Image (tube, rainbow, N blue to C red; front, side):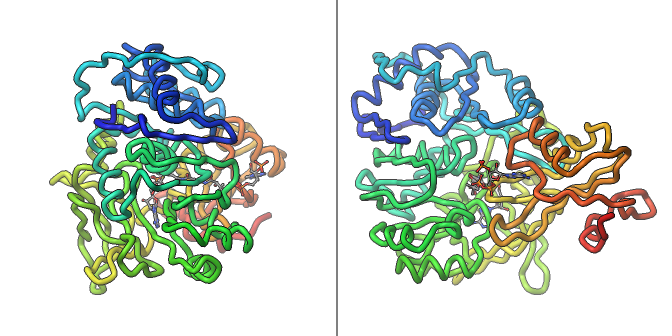
Length: 441
Ligand code: MLC
Ligand code: AMP
């Protein structure tokens, strides 16, 4: 188990279906019996009550759940299933919410053992599996409960996907750990009685006036996973009377900083380190800006099957290189100012590796060369743009569909720009910074 998930007090509602108290515990136990003895269990993470019960059941049995994006394309899904070595795949229809089981004797589950394996994109190659221990998840959640005074009295509402840490660790295991009620909706919007809302900036910026007004009664509105534009912060403040609270983290570190419920929550700050978290700015320039590096109990246990990538992600003294540029001072907390890698795109809060999309495009016979960039976008933060040199006749739509068949829908390019050649330096390396100035043909 997570160490202590209080699902005896749990109350989870997803799209009109609800399980609570003893019924929730018994449904989770029924899954735990089914999965007992499996080290890793893949769970197709539809936004359904079955997903919550399945993941909790795997944890209760002492195993490690591997969430799979239900919309993942063929190549991506195949990679996750093969790389994770999952010996069982649970899909929503395989979970019977009416099943009831008694507690399983999972023995003493080591807090260091992985409870989740979450796949996340890097700059090149297919996504890497991030091993998250029970200890790391518990430390992150307890840290947040400290700074947000998150308790059993809370009702959390969100519409986040369940295959990333935002929706799954914070948005699902959080309420289960604290016994607070969870209402998971299909679209982001007001829920009667909700005291907390979690969303990515795109969700906050898309929420209409009436809906924001209806969220006034909540005590904590939280934004994370991507940079929150100042105008969105201001609009939410105007319509709800509340300052959005920001928190920051990575799949590899879980949440490491958060603005606290009682501190002054200012636009542009993602708060201070959670209890036990080490945060430093490496090689700061004259203005104090450098790479944010992290240590402490919330860090991952490594990438599965990728010791090389794990070593590359850590400094010699064991701190995680976040790849984010920031500045820290005690008065304002952490301010994020950009990213070191240009080959990662954050679109709608999803991280997408340029290399993964380029590889998918290059798999199309009509593509001679391809480069992918993230271009500024008012709605999504960044949008994926593909720059393509054609070897044969092909339309933008055909290439977008080709990517969608291989990868998840959010990894599709929004725009395809056909060019005669990609700008390269003397070594032949594509110079992405010059692409925006390149004209399509
Ligand atoms: C998208 N569409 C396209 C397209 N791309 N259609 C044609 N061509 C393309 N290239 C379609 C979509 O499928 C959708 O169709 C419609 O266009 C709108 O797409 P969208 O603009 O992307 O919107 P939407 O699907 O509503 O998604 C927006 C969103 C989503 C904000 C709901 O991006 C989201 O759920 N983000 C959350 C990401 C997240 O949880 N990140 C956490 C990572 S963990 P249709 O038919 O479906 O409407 C992490 C750590 C931390 O970062 O700190 O938390
Ligand atoms: P992921 O790999 O999907 O977990 O994404 C982690 C990245 O999301 C971080 O490295 C940041 O770039 C970004 N991120 C998360 N939270 C915030 C935030 N509050 N503000 C800006 N960027 C964020």
